[in-house]
Length: 406
Image (tube, rainbow, N blue to C red):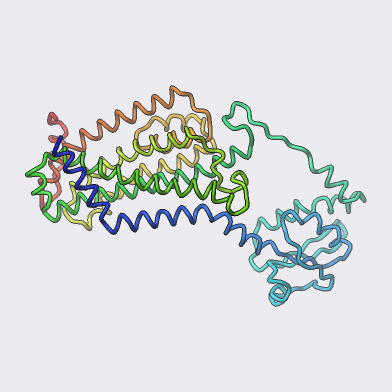
C-alpha cells in the first residue's frame, strides 16, 4: 500500500509541476470559452451575410420586403438595379446579394446575384416569397395567403423528460459540447499515459522502477494519478462552462434560457452521469493504453502502435452523436452496454431521454466488470512489456503472460 501511495503522489506532483499540464489546462479553458462564445460569433457573421438589396418591380419589392424580414435584412430598394455587379454590392453597404424581382407570364421571377451563392438561399427565398407568388396567381392579398399558409403546429412532448421543445433543444446542444469534452479528456489523457510509459521504458527508467516497485502497483499508481489530474481538468473546464453558460449571460444582459449554450436543459443527474461514465471510459482506455505503451521500444512507434486503439473511441463518439437524435433505437440501446463504447452512448441517452434505471445499472455493472478484466490483462502485458527491450514481445509470449495466474 505504501508503494502505491508513493507512486501515486510522485506521479501527481510530477504532472502538476509540468509545463505541459498547465498549458493543456489553459488551452482547454480557452477552448471552452471559444465554444461558449462561438454561437454569438456565428450570429455576428450571419447578420453580415443576411444583408440584401431588393431591385426590380417597385410594387413587388414593397410586398416582398415584409415577407423577407425574418430571414434577411433588406438594406435598400433600388428599382433601376437590374444587372448588378460586385461594385454595386460594395457600394450599397457591403450587401451579400441583390434580389431582382420581375413579373413573368407564369408568375414572379426571382434572380439572385450573390457574392457567395448557396443552394439554401434559393430554398429560403422560395419559401418566404411563396405567398407573393400564390397571391399573384390567385389575385389574393399576400397577407391573406401568408395567413393561410402559416398553419399552427404545436409540438408537445410525450413520454419525454423535457417539458418543452426549447428545453430539449438546449439539452442536445449542451450534450454535444459535453460529448466533445468527454472525447478530448479520454483521448488526451490516455495518450499521455501511453507516452509516459513508453518514455520511461525507452529511457531505461523502467528498469529502476520495476526493480523497486511491483509492476502492477506501478501501473495502478500511474493510472490513478492520471485519473486525478483528468478530474481536475474536468472540474476546471466544466466550472468555466457553467459560469459562462449561466452567470455569464446575465452579465451580458440576456437570460440563461435564451443563450445558445444555456445549461437550463441539463440536470444535476445528467452532470453526475457525465462524471461517472467519464471515469468508467477513462479507466478502461487508460489501462489499455498503459499496456500498449509498455510494448513500445521506440517513441516514434507510438502513433503506429497506438493508433488502432483509438478506433473504438472514434466509433463511440459518432454513436453518441447519433444517440442524441435516436436515443431509443435498438442498436443505440445495445451499444449502451458495450465496454469502451457505453460511456459515450449511455451518457448521451441519459441527457436526452428517460433511460430505465435497470439499463443504467446494468451498463454500470458490465463496464465496471470490464475495467477489472482489462486491468488484469493489462497488468500481465505491462509486467512482461516493461522488462523487454530492443524488440517487442512475441505474440506467444503475450499469450503465455495472459494465461499465467495473477
